[in-house]
Amino acid sequence: MREIVIGGAQMGAIQKADSRADVVARMIALLDQAAEAGCDLVVYPELTLTTFFPRWWMDDPAEIDQWFETEMPGPDTQPLFDAARKHGIAITFGYAEKTPEGRYFNTSILTDKEGNIVGKYRKTHLPGHSEYDEDRLFQHLEKKYFEPGDTGFPVWRNLDAWMGMCICNDRRWPEVYREMGLQGVELITLGYNTPTVNSQHGDEGLEKRLYHSDLSMSAGAYQNATWVVGVAKAGVEDGHPLMGGSIIVDPNGMVVARAKTEEDELIVHACDMDMCNFGKATIFDFKRHRRIEHYTRITGQTGVITPDQETRSAE
Amino acid sequence: MREIVIGGAQMGAIQKADSRADVVARMIALLDQAAEAGCDLVVYPELTLTTFFPRWWMDDPAEIDQWFETEMPGPDTQPLFDAARKHGIAITFGYAEKTPEGRYFNTSILTDKEGNIVGKYRKTHLPGHSEYDEDRLFQHLEKKYFEPGDTGFPVWRNLDAWMGMCICNDRRWPEVYREMGLQGVELITLGYNTPTVNSQHGDEGLEKRLYHSDLSMSAGAYQNATWVVGVAKAGVEDGHPLMGGSIIVDPNGMVVARAKTEEDELIVHACDMDMCNFGKATIFDFKRHRRIEHYTRITGQTGVITPDQETRSAE
Image (cartoon, rainbow over all chains, first blue to last red; front, side, top):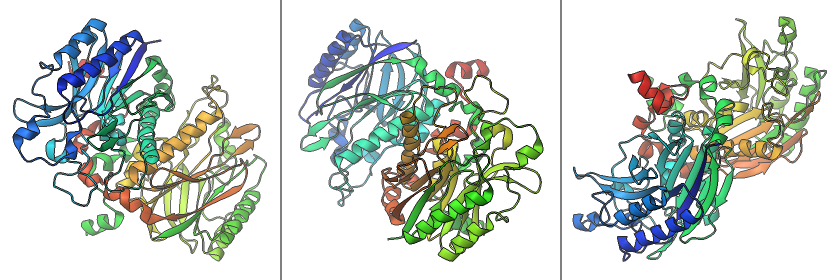
C-alpha cells in the first residue's frame, strides 16, 4: 500500500474586486482543514488566484497583465507556500503565468511536502477563441490571452508516486491521459473553470455538462489505470456561473469523492497508489496490447480528413 | 436531418452444439423484427455465428478450423444476406475469418442495403493470452487463435454517413475512436463477447464490468462527436456467462437505448447523423484545438517508459 491522502480544495467564486491576499487566505483556510484531515496533498483549481478573466475582452496590456504572476512564489503567494511547508503538505494549483520573456501561459505547479516546486505544467488545449465573438452568450478568450503550453505532459516522482498534471479543457482529450499513462502515471491532478452554461449552446444544461466532465476524467482514469483528481472553481463570478462537481476518481474509473456545493469545499480520500497496479498489468498492459502501427493518424494529422478528401488529395 | 434507424441485435447464448443454420435463423428472426421497426441498419455481435470458442484450449487444427469461415457469404450465411437484401436493410456482424492464405482474424463486415459488402474490419486489440494460463478462472485465447488485424480503422460512406467498425476489446482503447474521428466518423458499430466474470479478478462484479463497457463507448462517442452502437453476445454458453448491456450512444455520449435481457433482443433508435455536427464544429473541432506535437509518445512507444527509465537509457 502506498497511500496518499488527497484533498481536493474546490474554490467558490472569486470576484474581480477580490485581492490575491483575499484568495490566498481562503486557500490557507482550506489547507488548515486538510491538515486536520491528515492530507498529504492538496489540489486547487485552474487560475486559483483570480476570477476567470478570459470571459472579458480586454485590449489594454496593463489591464491584462494585472491577472498574471511574474514570480512564483511571489509576495502574495509566499504565505501559502509557508503554510504548506508548516503542515508538511504538498500542493498543486493553477495561475496565469507571464514569463521574463513576456510569454503568457495558463500554468499549474506541483510542490513536494517541503514547499519546493517540483513540477510545472502549461495548458496545452486552449478552448474558445481569440477574436471577439458576438454570437456567444459570453466570451471565452483563452486563445487570445495565452499561448498553447510548451511543456507537453511530464510526469514527476513525488510522494512515492508518478504524478502528472493537466488543466481544464485538457481533461476532455484522451491523448492527455495516454501521454502520461505511457510514462506510468499513477495520479493526474487538474483544475478547471467550467461555465455552467455552454456559451454556444445555451440549453445544454448543467446536468449534461457535469456528466461530460465526469465521463472524460473517469474514462481517462480507467483506460490508464490511474487516479484522477479534478477540482473546480465554482459559483457565480460577477454574474457568470461556474459549475462545481469536483471529484476524485480511482484507477477503475469509479468516482470515490464528490463536492456537494459550489463554494470553498474540501473533499478528501485516502488514495492507494498500488490500486493502479492491476489494470497496468492486465487489460491495460500497454506493451502487450497496444498496436501503434495503426495509430498513425493521431500524430500524423491535426484535423479531420474524410476518405473522399484523402482520395482527392492523392489524385 | 440524416436519420438512420438502427437496430442493435443482441444475441443470447450460442452453445457449442448449435449449428450455423440455427444461429442464422435467429439472426433472420431479429432482422424481420427490425424490418417491422423500420430499421435501415442492423448491428450484430462479435463472432456472431458461433459460441465464443477462444475460452477453450484446442490443439487440433481441424478442431480449430471448424469455428472459422473461409468465404463470406458462404452457404450457411447466404440466407442472411438474402433476407437483408429483401428487407433493404444494411447489416454488420462479426465472424472468425480464415483467409485463402491461411491467416486467421477476428473480423466484421458491413453491407449496404443491397447486401453488398462495403467494408471489412479485422480486430486490432486482441485481449487475453496465447499460452495456457492455469491461474485464470477460464481461458481467453484470442492471442492464440487470431493474429492482430491488418486493416487499421477505415471509415466508409454508407447510408449517407461516415461509418467505421471496431470489435469488443477495441472499444476500451481511445486510439480506436480517435483514428476514426480523424476521418470524420459519424457512426461506429461494434460487437462484443464479454465474460460476466473477470478471469483474473473474480470478485470484480457485473455492475462494474457493465460500467466500464458503457464508460469506454460513451467517452469515445462524446470525444469524437459520433454515434456508437455496441452489441453483445450474452447469456450462458456451455456454463460460461457473457454479459449483455448492448447500448446505442449519441454524439453527446448519452445512452439512448439499452438492452434489458441477456437473450436475443432488438434495441432500436432513430439516429440523426447531423447530431454529430455541433461537437465536430465546436469543442472537438480537431483542427483548431489538437496539439499533435505533444502526442508523440502515443505513436513513438508501445509500452510504458517511466521517467527514471528514460534517464537510464539516455545515459
